[in-house]
Amino acid sequence: MPRELLKGNVAMAEAAVRAGVEAYFGYPITPQTELLEWMSHRLPELGRVFLQAESEVAAINMVYGAACTGVRVMSSSSSPGVSLMMEGISYIAGTELPVVLIDVVRGGPGLGNIAPSQGDYNQIVHGGGHGDYHSIVLAPSSVQEAIDLTVLAFDLAEKYQAIVVVMADGNIGQMMEPAELPPMLPIKSEYPEWAVRGAKGRDHRILTSIYMNPEDEEKTNLRILERWNKIEENEIRYREYFLDDAEFVVIGYGTAGRVAFSAVRSARAEGIPVGLLRPITLNPYPFAKVAELANQAHAFLVVEMNTGQMLQDVQLAVAGKVPVEFYGRLGGVVPYPDEVLNEIRRISHEPIAVGVDPRRNWMQRLKTEIS
Amino acid sequence: MAITAPANLVYSRPESMTNIATHYCPGCTHGIAHRLIAEVMDEMSIREMTIGVAPVGCSVFAYNYFNCDFVEAAHGRAPAMATGIKRVLPDRFVFTYQGDGDLASIGMAEIMHVAARGENITVIFINNAIYGMTGGQMAPTTLPGQKTTSSPSGRDVEQTGYPIRMAELIANMEGTSYSVRRSLHDHKQIRKAKKAIRTAFEVQKLDLGFAMVELLSTCPTNWGISPQESLQWVDEHMVPVFPLGDYKIAPIIRDLRV
Image (cartoon, rainbow over all chains, first blue to last red; front, top):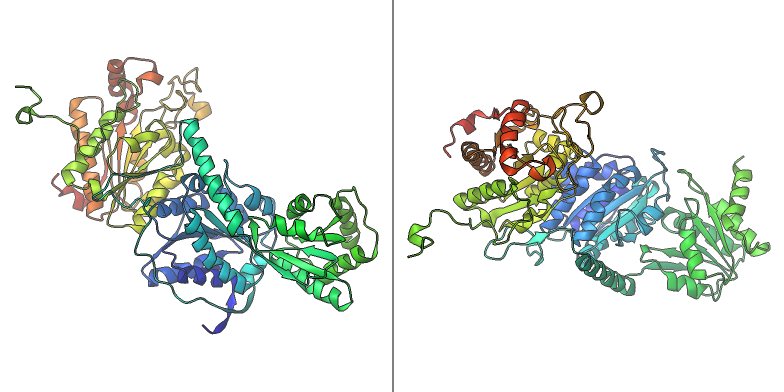
């Protein structure tokens, strides 16, 4: 396929179409609306299902119903809308159904704004709906990666009967850059043995997330956990840049990871032995890789567009072996490469305070910087 | 010669019901409503083509009692879930079975929009004016003055508003082809209820849009009266607030012979 100039939201939508999505249910919300708009003409022209729901609550429950039939189905939204979907996401997890959700994260909390943010890391990676389950979370840092991860999301969802969230940010959704779309896959003609499509010539099937007997719910929780263990064993993905001889390691994902990459290259040009780890799966998280790097690095720098949510996962993996520093911009502000470069210079030249929450010092530096 | 010999059989379990004892309380009319739906599925030979959507409430386990494919929705979201199924499988019969708290309180947005869209599904709405599963709290259809565990002095309309008449409300939506209210409190009403359920499924068969049958039902346990008194209570207290009748029947449906 030729490379085309594509907007992130449209690219993810068309990637889903080519991955064989048969039904899309969604609700308009900036900065993901172009995704819904693309689906509104593209799916009907292919004879597939598009429906604008009355709310995100309804949209995710339409997705839930369609997923019960065994077809590839998805929704997309942005932070406040995804909050509304959390009930349905929990039910989908409890019913062990494959579903893909694209979350184009914006500034928050509350109504926040429509600028790019990573403020929903904890919501999507560590939590969300009620109950004991995990979502697979993929974080693209370019339009091309957003396409590739959207296709991967459908495969992973079906392989593990799990929810896969492509967690982009407003920047990935809104920016245009050259990218290559995948070939058009045929839609499914065979459906899984659990699919509910009418009990023709077989016993009736029930899909539910209710297990009144606690022992049955415990077994269900264990079944979900066993599947998650396999995901942890097989599906951790990340990109490494200049890490072989790195004495300082920057960690960032999505847009923050991409900005950090520019800063790391500039720092390398200055002779600073720094590298970048860019997690692609935020769940499962590359804990082992970070722990391994903790044996070679003098210090880490975590860069995020939030107040240090992934920071805590890095701290868990580093386990106090070396200092972990933090730099973040908040509320929809995207850091410039120069800001990250200054942080790399600082940690590589100045002594780092140990035994202090890195966010305390970062907050003081940031307040001075923006005042 | 046993009276259960096939030649003497006048009443048996519909094929569309499973051979499982229900968990419903003695005197509850859920069993009647279930049976009427199952009889209609049998008569239309659609059991293998039907997908039911169960609600949250006393009928949360309805899926165990019907011998067709079933899914279990989140509280109030059955119409949205049914929409997802029906859009992907338009040639299947899809119905929801919902109580008053599920449909008229937490699921009000979903039921209004499924009707507005004229979604080609069938909704069976069980109105017994109380929350059963959680132990007798006030419902959106609780009558003025009716005592519940969360309106212990009786429903005070100054504080908690008035009962919602869903059959009338749904009839106002352009996407609705069929919206009626029936009752399960005596034999005559039960026969009329069955005919309405049959019509609602025929509407779906003919792709004529949204159909809802509201059924006035009992809850002897939470009303705190006997099954017999409960049936009388429906007739004497519920019917005046929720009049039985046809609130919308699209002209083409009037000609249906069921």
